[in-house]
Length: 127
Image 1: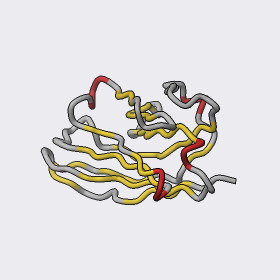
Image 2: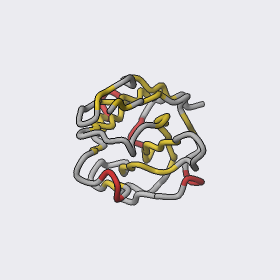
Image 3: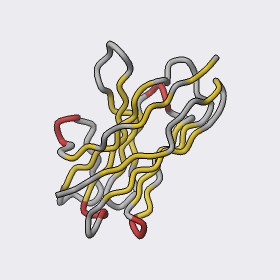
């Protein structure tokens, strides 16, 4: 059983930054591809960023490219979402997700690939 616990959300001003953390309760988090999704009210849950098991390849949705990064620290069983220059398009509940995979250097952008989910952390942005 994999448990994911997000932290770091909270109110931030437009143009500001937040670092979200996702702690995974697994023996070896490097067995999992990791992703951050978000869901705003009335909208579908969308993939924001994903990272391969190795950490060598990342994927970002177009709207966050150049502003968000998804580093991972396998020694700490933690993946982060560094969000910079937040804007009015970014407020949502942010979810961490994990996909067990045998592929070391492949990242999946499909929501269905992610079997394990955290409870979400809210990120409101004030103008």
